[in-house]
Length: 501
Image 1: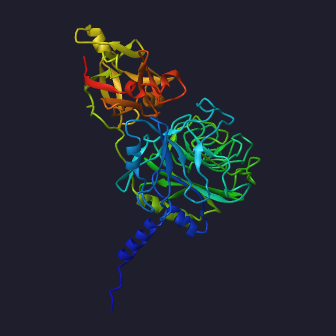
Image 2: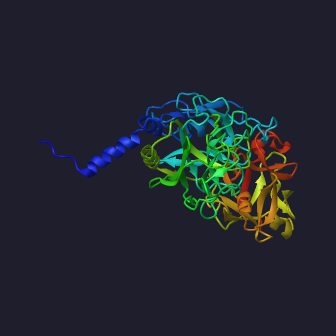
Image 3: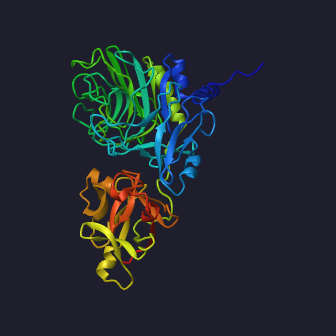
């Protein structure tokens, strides 16, 4: 007679089966199949082998698609790294894995214009959000203010008062109070068409409509003309401030019912923050959902928000809590973890450095400052003590993210390089979240093969660039004169040496 399996063995087998099934397999088994499935980090069906996303490189504007390493597996980050070597790359399309064709691409102009010359939103850097899943490297979608993706002609999404569900895995530490870092159902016109015309996951600390406990950030539902943490009152004390690095957000809604659920995406189970009737204000019962899909922006293209997206789906029908719970267990089984944000020559915290331009004809110029203006100046061993100090910087742990760096002035203690209106400035640290983000930078191996290129943590498409001896945070081929693609790789590559002072 065969021995009876132990309860522990049965539990392991059940967990193995659970992890083998993708989130959309689980939703399908629960009777609420995915009609959109987006991820740049992994396949969301256990048999999916198709394209996850497309990237475009700055050197020649060619594109390639990134697929999983194996069926149901993690994205092939090595293929992206190879394609994007020695240049910049943008995420141009996030493909829908569900088969419904609901791909996400650059959001067009809406009620609010984007930063692009045609009013469209920016595209995300392909390298702004590196992570690992079960030890394998992948990249998320790092959304800076002005960045957004959209599909105004999505198919089979919920319309009117029809039930739907959605979840997303987000960075719980990357947010702001701008409107609106959303993922979900929105207007097909890119305009605000009234209460109840949206149903999307919102994440951030905007307190203009609703709030949860503490100071945020919170998971809320963007239902248009309102971010809702519950129904009534405006504040829902059961909606907690989020502090986990990886966060699972769930929003689902049907006729006069909706729910918010959330959890640490790296461990634990979902909690219900709200489950009940629709808001009492006019327009939310019944709902008037239109069925477009957005990421990183509001329904009217409000694009002042920031956040990071790793994966998410939308379903037809109202998923059960039990199905949500299985999906959360699958997300935990993916084992999201952080990885290095920097590469190239190591810069020791506390060391004094100087940064020399590598562009031909400018190699005697160093990154320095004149008052608050950060510029390049000719510096040598025979320069004055004052100039040597102005061209020397102390390496500090990143003020907004300790995985990156900040650069403190050697001659003006407490003042740091920051970007402001895309120019580099030297300003005193005022302790604000905004300053810390503006003054945090992530070095990588120099794009021209020399030294380091130093990208802005909060805008990873932008790098320290000298242009006419003034320094900016420039993007490769962007809309500003200092974004010119000509000589970009050279202008953003800096040879780093021991500081003059």
